[in-house]
Image (cartoon, rainbow over all chains, first blue to last red):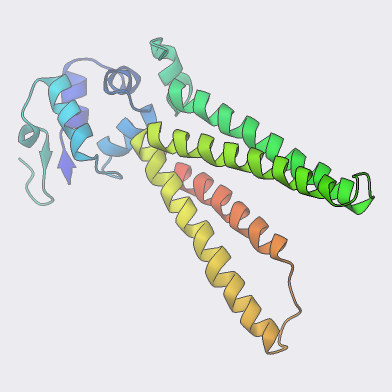
Length: 67
Length: 142
């Protein structure tokens, strides 16, 4: 699954640590999601969407659908 | 209460809650391991009164073991989801080594191909594999 987490975070000038704190996860989790090593659970994906104020489909895309 | 200082998220790749729960698991595990060593020594050198002494010592070891298991269960339930993912993978690897490796060795021992092995070695291999699995998992997602 592809995602725009890194771009969205950069647009807000947030560090990985700040986003991790907002999501109540480790910085390692944010990093792993950003680089595509780990796909978040549905509850975490919803929390990410809520933090950025966007629908999930504007953040996460199936592989091959760059969005 | 969760630590809201951002630096705690920067300095370590675990959340403050995970670090707190991990310390709890470690404390319980050390107490359990200490009780196993003490009970083993007491039984080996006859420090305990015959009969009831060994039963009481085993009961203490069991209680501390249950406390360790409960603390680990609590840690897993509250863990950061990537950490839980890593821990579950490591547990699966430890289980595979213990059950599959142990059974394979036991069958070979029955056939006389390898020497008999004490169960404690199987248990140690499970724990070692789980520990290595956590380290490998954390490096993999770093």
